[in-house]
Image 1 (cartoon, rainbow, N blue to C red):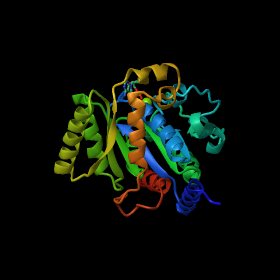
Image 2 (image 1 turned 120 degrees about the vertical axis):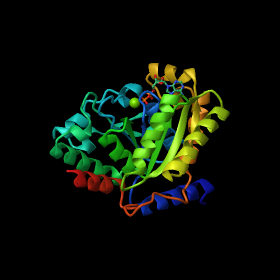
Image 3 (image 1 turned 60 degrees about the vertical axis):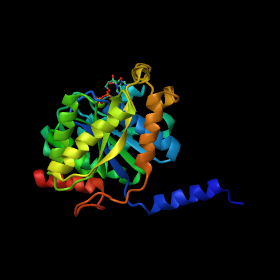
Length: 292
Ligand SMILES: Nc1ncnc2c1ncn2[C@@H]1O[C@H](COP(=O)(O)OP(=O)(O)O)[C@@H](O)[C@H]1O
Ligand SMILES: [Mg+2]
C-alpha cells in the first residue's frame, strides 16, 4: 500500500520531470564579506535536506572563490580547468556534504568580463549542461557591480541580495538592486538581511531597502528572511563545515531553515520579462552574445 510519504515522493518526482529547467538562484551582494558564501552553501544544504531537492552549488566568485575551503573539500579540478579547456564542467562536479553537488570555483581569476570571448563562451556552454541536472542551481556570484556578477545575478530566476544592517552594506545592496533594475531581464528579487541582532532590526532594514526600491526604482523586493549574528557561523567556518550541519540547533541554522522554507515555496509572481521561462543559461548566453 502506498503511504503518504510515497505519494509525496511520487508527486515530487512528477513535478521534477515536468520542470524543464533548474530553478536558478543567484546569491549576490554589493559589498563583500556580508555572508554570501555562507548563505549560498547553507541554503543549498537546507534545501537538499529538508525539501529533498537536487541542488548544485556553483562557486562563480572568480575573484575570491572559497566554497571548497568552507566545506572542507579539496577538489582536484575547478572552473579554471574548464576555462582552459582541460576539463568539461561535468568532470569537475564533486560531491559536497549532505548530498549536494558542487562546482568548485577558481580563485584569483579576473572577472568573467575580463576573460576572452572564447573562454566566456566555453564556460557558458559548459554551465548550460547543468540545467537539467538539478532542481536548484545556487550560484555564489561574488560581490560588486561588475559586468559578470550583474549578468549572472540578473539572468537568474531569483536573485538573493545579501546585506548586513550596516549603512555601507545597505547602500551597496541598493546600488546592486538599481543596476539589476536596468537589465533587460529582471529576476525575482529577494533581500536577505544577515548578521542581525534582532528580528525587529531585520524588519527595519528590509522595509527601508524595499521601500526605497519600490519608490524610486519601481522594484518589488521580496523578503528572503534574515540570519542572526551568531558565533556558530565563524566556528563552523573554522571547522570547515556548514553551520546547518555542524550546529543544527544554533540560531543561524534555525534562520537558514526559515530562508529555505521561503525559497522552496511556489511563487505566484515569477520572473518577469520576455525571456522568462527560457532557462537561465540561455538568457546568460543571450546577454553575453549581445555584449560580444
Ligand atoms: N550570520 C553570521 N553571524 C556571524 N558571522 C557571520 C555570519 N555570516 C557570515 N559571518 C562571517 O562573516 C565572514 C564573511 O562571510 P562569507 O560568507 O565568506 O561572506 P562573503 O561570501 O559575502 O564574502 C565569515 O568570516 C563568516 O564567519
Ligand atoms: Mg564569498
